[in-house]
Image (cartoon, rainbow, N blue to C red; front, side, top):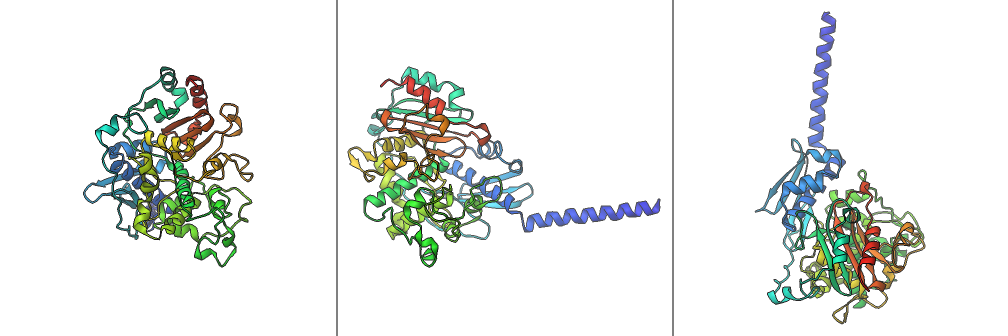
Length: 451
């Protein structure tokens, strides 16, 4: 009996030592998966608090914890409104992370041990009361059509987690609906819809003669190896051949880039070539960050580059709510981070439906928007030459032949149908397992909207 009691004491002591060592390890060297989780939580809460002005408790519960990994339910958040910072960590302070708000530019993750560049951008000038009373898109006055309202009232079509849906026909909003707690003034995250906005900024560069689709030898680090063959058009079509893992289930290139790397472009620039450029489709958020870095470098003025989205697109289109967010080093995260109201996302969709022309002024080169509707061979016809998606095979019978769309994580979409002079915006929080696609909604709207 004494022997058994002695062995039990030894076992319990060893167990305490092991648990203690594990706790020390979690504090000292937290696994990357935990650091990714805390970085994600810090970023989402920071942007929604400081850009969308939503309560942090609501954002943590609904946006971070509800649809995500079980470990995110252990996340705790602290918001410092004076210092413009959000700090997150698992219970007990494990795997801490921080996100910093910079006026006019939104929030950036600040990985442990890194510094965030002290930058800012001027806010848009306030709208005059006269402008607000004008008809959309010049102002905010809209007139809904009853059949469209009836379609938008159907949750089976707008999908679970819908936060906003806006329908544009012939340059006017003809219907809109908002989820509980959201309205026409709430900026919402577009996730990968940002890629198409980023591509359009390159379109402005091409129109101004600063870039061409055939540009190669794009970066100094690439000019001494096979990566010098990568052309701008390869990056835009997701055919660069660069090795990049876009899987979100664990710590992959995409999550490492977004939440562990203070200088995202630097991380992607160092990636090796896995395929010959132009031969294989490989969806890559890293590619979009490189595109941001390339057009920003073309301006040769960091301050102007930070203001360029407003100068080149948001200002002319009247997208007053739009905010593109850079990383800690100051490169726009052109893959993922742009906030705008549903009406401003609709303005951008209308701009594309009008072939890159706004109020009679051509902002994008002729033929640029057409390439958004041209599927690439390497993608099997589902991705375009210009950072947009085309209807999947099982959706093509429901939608016009010239349909293309901006698409983002958790059910974000702006669908453009140029032949129908129609744009449909649908924003929300619909996790991947909900399998939501807007094709059925759009098909019903096509029936409801008069020609």
